[in-house]
Amino acid sequence: MSIQKIARLAGVSVATVSRVLNNSDSVKAKNRERVLQAIKESNYQPNLLARQLRTARSNMVLVMVSNIANPFCAEVVKGIEEEAEKNGYRILLCNSGSDIERSRSGLSLLSGKIVDGIITMDAFSKLPELSALIGAAPWVQCAEYADAGTVSCVGINDVDASQHVVSQLADGGHRRIALINHDLSYKYARLRERGYKSVLHLRELDYQRVEYACDLSASAGLKAMQTLLAENPPDAVFAVSDTLAAGAMRAIEQAGLKVPQDIAVVGFDGTELSEMIALTTIQQPSREIGRKAVDLLLNKIDNPDAPTERVMMDWRYVSRAST
Image (tube, rainbow, N blue to C red; front, side, top):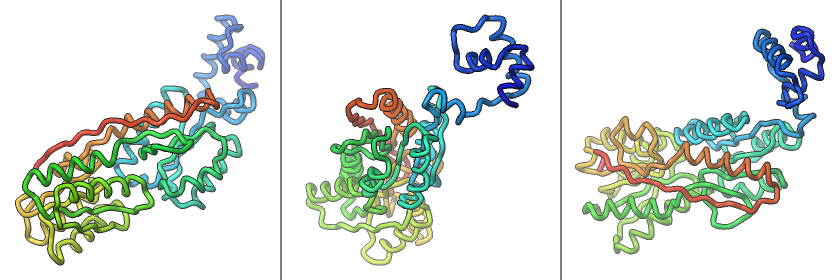
């Protein structure tokens, strides 16, 4: 259904339909009602590209996610979508895998003016390359906090959170605390490992083992835990995601050991999975992080010269049966 057909159906001019679509105050109430009724009856959807030509806005936001299979990322995206829709925007989702070529393909939407701005959840090490591709377009880095740079961001204090986890384990009498980490190209992985090592040093704990999972899946967590169990096993494990922790718990059970009697386990993110398996974890405000990222981006879209904003949100330690 075209705008011309809507005009014929409503018995008004094309210009009147256009003014109604653009919320103009110059339309008579009777004509506005006729146009809206015609739109409703025909299930008309305004052409976004045509609207973009008139307003220089697409009301679309590109969201580049490193791994949509990660439950934490999925929750953040839900928050992004909720806040975007509340403000009249829709999102286009790109599962980039932090691959620069896949990112390049997604970012072509910026140069084509298909989207008004971008929210990324990619590896922090990729940001210089992304910056060259994004240029001056409105941009927010989500779920990784940066204390420097020109990109607005929102996240939590990963160092403090991981220090709290390891301190809790040490206070509980654990002396052989291991870490299951992920790719160090992600800033959160580097920061959480820094927090882990700093507490071991402060508490003068000699045992230090870090296993790097190939991804954030439960199967990767299981393999990492099997490696830790093979020689000089720990009495506690801190995993940088709930999915990795779930895999670690499975490996411990398969080895004939018990959680937490033999080995305590702590995860990170506070996803629904952690509740299902009674996992102690760091709970991130995932949806709030997504919503705040949209707030920062819309401010940048409306005010291109606005200063860089860095928002650090609160986290919560949730103790459950795994410790």
